[in-house]
Image 1 (cartoon, chains in turn green, brown):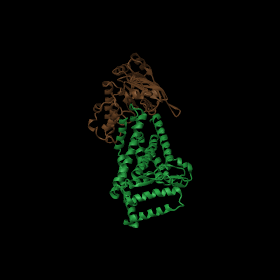
Image 2 (tube, each protein chain N blue to C red; image 1 turned 180 degrees about the vertical axis):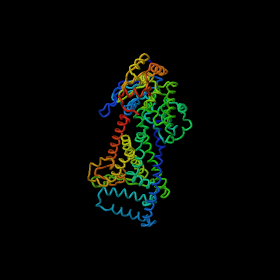
Image 3 (cartoon, each protein chain N blue to C red; image 1 turned 90 degrees about the horizontal axis):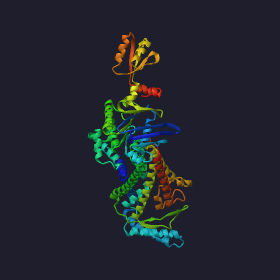
Image 4 (tube, chains in turn blue, cyan; image 1 turned 120 degrees about the vertical axis):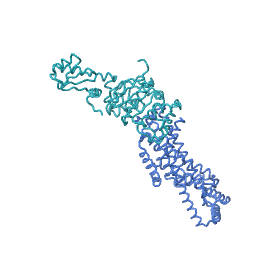
Length: 326
Length: 304
């Protein structure tokens, strides 16, 4: 089995797919870094570079004033207390909340690329994993070895999971390494707000608490990996079913982009929440952004994605082992 | 023969979309034998071969490779098989060596030194570390055979092995296949739609048409039966009578007399006819003989 996975990795490596993907990321990260840098500069100009401490001080006073008001609802009070702790931390540790370090950039990059960019990159790897063997005719040599068909498919799938992990890891390293040149490498222990839940139209803040930044980033990259795994598995299934890599890419591309569009307009179409492509923005749950459709939670989205991936795997293995190869 | 046949096919059938494509094939291959699979395009040669190598599941019937059932003991059966189905499609972005390594890795029982052996055998030593994308068709064909031989198979299945090769390449391939059968004791199944190919290469041949085997026989007996001479002579009665004294004569259409082709006797027969005052207008040896037989058996179905 290790030999088979090694073979698949060798082919992936020699097709230079991984290399191209890393190159794309390495090219995009400096662009985003520059954009972020410009944004920070603009904010600084507006507020004045030296003034952020005073500004933060002012915010803390505001929060304290609101807290002392007696008519405050209990959950808002809770939220404000947590927020106050965060602001106090920034001040005590001399952190400018508007001037992010490399970890913040990593986090923002992950949040923005989870819905489209990273799934697209994963798709490029997964799309021709099986279909290229079919269209190139090499599948005939592969399947006439003394190796069972399911083992061959499994080796390809494992190679895919390894590549996905590699891509996610590379994104993390590249974003940190490159943006750190500009923003500095600090900020791992900055406290972050999390634990938002939504009920109906409301955002419930009772569960909100602080966690260190590194834990927050780890969580988000975990979600990024999970989304990539699901998209990879779905692409893998299409790659088994279709001979043409272009068709696989086309279908996946349409699905992913329609997901982005749908997320913005499906709030009243409730059954759309069972589509995998509107569930990809997992990091929004951690951020406390309102989900696209009422009733969607982190657990729900993960369950939906898991079911899609599982179904795709079953279909892939079933058709691959049973199918006649022409 | 008492040995285990390298390949034993019994009542093999395949139905695709309600249409029976392969209608009950049965045949056996013995060690050291080159077996030809001859039929026009679309007769079911490739479908049959794909069933033999486990790419297509037969609708019914059984296939045994060296006594192992392809459907129930797939891995064991495949250990005894090397094959090229249609063109030898290898990974163009890997070198020849990497391609062989890739396939060797899939079967842990293949020792590393086997790679050098097969490369020597097919004579690819000089270019083995070049990318396959830069190979000529002949070299790819040889690399294809190298990968088929990796597992030291008892049965080699080659689908149209000379397709796309130039005349020199075809002769080389033919000699190589004969060498494998005679010196290495492999059984080789070769499919082709080229009669001349099969005639030169094979010991036995199965003629297949519309999914059925019409005839299985040794090439020599098929040819003996079919090689003949056509005579056009006047008067026909006398000529027939005279020839009948020497050999079998049949009266064909348009007063043509047909006799077997016996090397060295034709001139004598002709002299005899001429001596008795028969005017011999035309003598024609019918060659290649397999082609006639083929047309006869398949009822004039087109081959190319």
